Length: 74
Image 1 (cartoon, rainbow, N blue to C red):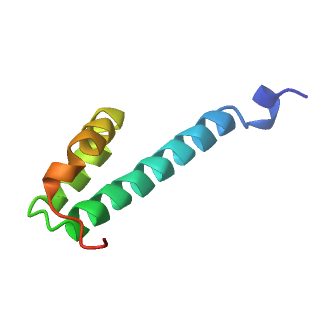
Image 2 (cartoon, rainbow, N blue to C red):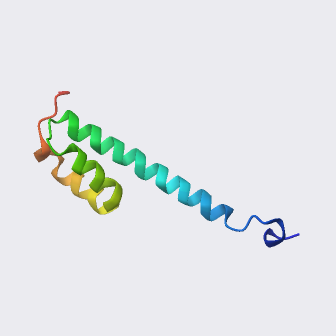
Image 3 (spheres, one colour):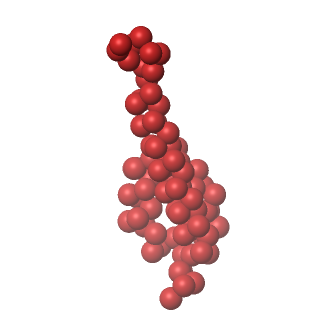
């Protein structure tokens, strides 16, 4: 019996997609909270950009996050 016969074609792809979306949501939440804790008035924009922009915005935020605002947890 093969995967095609059991009807489980796409299970691996679905699992990979769910893990990728979960990772994107976790990183988005982290960026949103970090921008908020730094006093940024654009934390929602950073969060939405992080989710829809993916790794490009993640790297951009990491580079410019010191300019986003002061960190209150020093």
